[in-house]
Image (cartoon, rainbow over all chains, first blue to last red; front, side):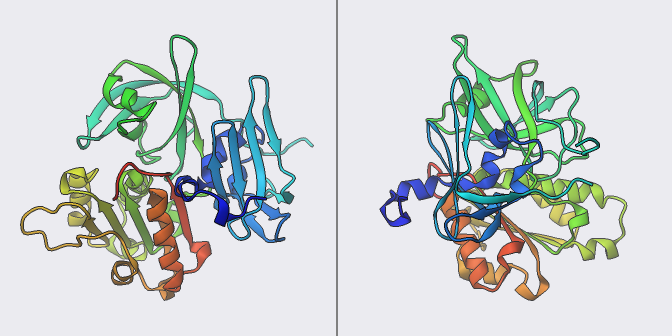
Length: 98
Length: 260
């Protein structure tokens, strides 16, 4: 896990909110995931996915915990798939539909 | 499981440009007709996809500038000189042209009148776009409301721009504040100010927020949008001033070409 101190400062200036990943997440999940809560496997804190820090690279999107900086989700687009690694989330809770 | 009221997958749609409004030298609004648009909430965005003749595709997100009450969808694009997508949207696109978009996207950074207030909006540069959708929604939703109702939902906007001519929606903001005493608009111009300017001349800092923002005891709903460094500084300052983090919602736009 790359800690914040060793990541280039420019990466921090380019980060965005969980909201920015809502588009690609909509290709994987039917409900809007940015209002769902994810429990961080790093520190155990549950947060609304909208507040996660999003770092977008050419290859994909990384979503980090704003508290402990652990990677919660990685999303990448390949020619044939949208690929998700959510191993950094112990659980994800979406509000029950009405 | 049957009977689950799930939102539909967000599909790509074709949109047609019906009007173009030059807001400032660098910002332009595209007014779009989007058949079958399902409606949206103020603060949401769309993803726009452009496909070149060779099949190369580029996607960017743009905040919706128009309120849900408008039938056409407006996007305000800020032109970035070295941008891959914005020069095309700013310079080339004309009425009648089409583009692909999907949305509305994002249920986190949204505000509607039902959410309540007071409302504090802090924006830098093109970060004003989703905040403007919120202001326009408030204006339309409260159009027939009496002053008592308006006083329950007061709003303060703190807006950082480089120069007076860079202020997007400048005239509309002045009009809104003039006709509604429950709206307060404060500008800060960080690079250059017109002669006789008595307002703020620096980047938003803790002191400025303390002077402008509602006190934390009022529990304002706060929305901060703009370049990432501005948003992070403002959010940190607001929490240090005592605002609850859960009430401070941020939409970082990423890096900016210059300071705001």
